[in-house]
Image (cartoon, helix red, strand yellow):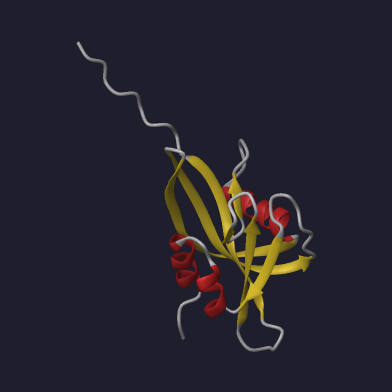
Amino acid sequence: MTQPPPPPPPPILAAGCVLWRPAPSGHGIEIALVHRPKWDDWSHPKGKRKHGESAEACALREVLEETGRHCELGARLPTAHYTVDGRPKEVAYWSARALSGTFTPSAEVDALLWLPPSAARPRLTHPRDRALLDTATPSP
């Protein structure tokens, strides 16, 4: 008699934000993109949830850790679903307004860019991040 296949591994839970601020010109907004040297990619700030941590608390913590900025969560955005090393991953996202703080490069994130959405979109490495930006910043 054959054994049923093992259940799939539980998903990796993470959270992040499409972080924005008013443009210094006073017209429009700028989007924060972080560069992760480990993956050599540009993405929205995000990271894994700690045991017992809510998705909202994780998103706030990850934005602070990766960008140095406190933020205020806004609208909930679609959850990203993808696979990492054969394991499902779910990333909860919010639109978030940047507040106070200063970026300091680290081994995890070595660069931060603030760009208008039209310039941020092609800089994002992953199509799922571009789709998320499109949802967070609908065309006028």
